[in-house]
Image (cartoon, rainbow, N blue to C red; front, side, top):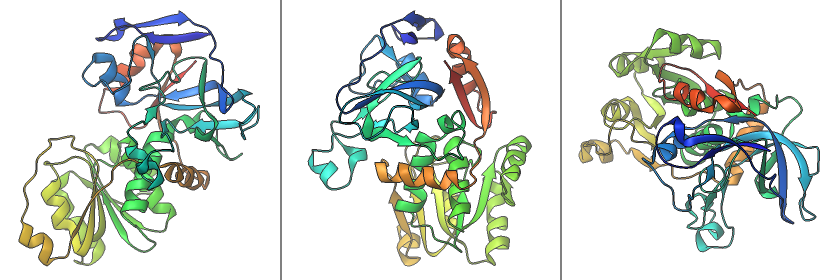
Length: 340
């Protein structure tokens, strides 16, 4: 089979389109013929060598977010040959104390398809059958490659940790990013109201197409919009992954007893805030941590209920380097896909 193999650390030149053997599934595995693979920033960071997750070894095939058709299955697999599936790239061991506590996202033996083991930038990939989620008939197979990491991450943050409920209001910063787009649609499907911030008219237009009515162009416009939408009360939940650039705005936007869910540090790793303000207002500051398989299953179910997959571009396997360049262009909206 053809695979885009990483043989070193650096620019696109460390990627090589190579013929390699088709992987063989074990008793509890499935062999998936890849229909599409969604690119992630981690693909680029590990290619450059900026980040190297424990377990990464060269040569390596990246590609975390995979959708395809089961070509072969081990005798212990409950997923049949021919099933249309999307893969959960996060594979906990299931046996350690953290896994038994329901915290598989923090498993010390966690394997990540496309990050610590070979992934979907190839014609075929092997994965545990437990990681293969059968798609609803209403979900397009290529669109499904847009879903795994962003939708599971967003569901875990907004619903599992943030406890967002129908009738509440969610503020999402940088809402045209992939996690932001997922969070917005998840909030809509649980019956919540959404306020979004974006950095350009083009991104505002993209959010408008998926039904977002309340959009602020940057943090400076948030306060007035929040006051208008909530009648001065403040939002119930903020999804915060930018860090210092929006932290103060996020806290100020919360109602008494509001919940700030944070899961990123795009603009820096340190913030300051008033402890007395936070405890007097009864604010909850909630670190999202890693999602678990049940978050993935629930997110996919919500997407099947009329979700929209936004695609910034689709590229053949041999143009993976160009696809990664597009991924790094922050002006794009939606997933960048590779089609083997």
